[in-house]
Image (cartoon, rainbow, N blue to C red; front, top):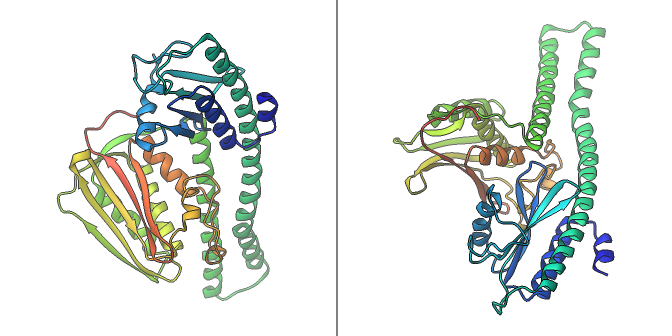
Length: 370
């Protein structure tokens, strides 16, 4: 019956919820957590219950499941972590699609042989169901990519072809010719940015991320990105607030510049009526990091959209955003590049009042390329 039910479920999150819930409630466990392997190869929380419901507890599980010497089911991990009884890899074919983390029983009883068999069956059925849902998801993402990319690329491409055709067929004043050539150049650069984003997505998902970490002084990089974004708007006031004794950070210069450029570009796009954009940087000595923030006075982000921001092809859908161009990759790239360099990204936002994005980067000595 469980197998038939799971075959009918196509959504990864729902499969995760059923799998964890069945294990927790049937075996009277204190908690359970399922980590699903994402397209980039990293583990993401599918769902959690009981003692693992909090972000702090889930964070403690990640180092445990990423260890090369982790103790796997049916052996008990009790010695490695008192809150975790079993780590159960979910394998479909030869592909690991997730890891199910289960606590001891609430009653502290031992697991019987029947319990072990049930968990084996759950792991087998859950792995196949998750693999099927991921295939459906991947096909859906590809279809979404083709639809969005073709739509977003068509607009600048139409402008390029149209103005190039007019330039070939008409004798024009120099001023008009220069204006039309500038339009062609601007739209060509827009296409270049989109293609760069798509290439970055391909590298991230294939695991082919190359980083050259170096000790970097942030004010220079921030000034470069700010100078570029100033040229795109005459509606916004830019304020720079950087402490004078700011520590150097350990980052890849190009990718950190891309992170700042994406966030500044979003701050401009999503405050279409102008306003102040504030770039701040502070030391966080307790965490041995520097925190950079970019705040705008724009349309803000509703609670319904907050969980979607760092995912691919997801954009804020509101009447005010219909005229804002983009394919919904910028913040996903920001998150992936930031975390690849050992940093963190988060945000605060209030609807119709603005948003502030924070990027924290580590300080330290440079390493070789990774």
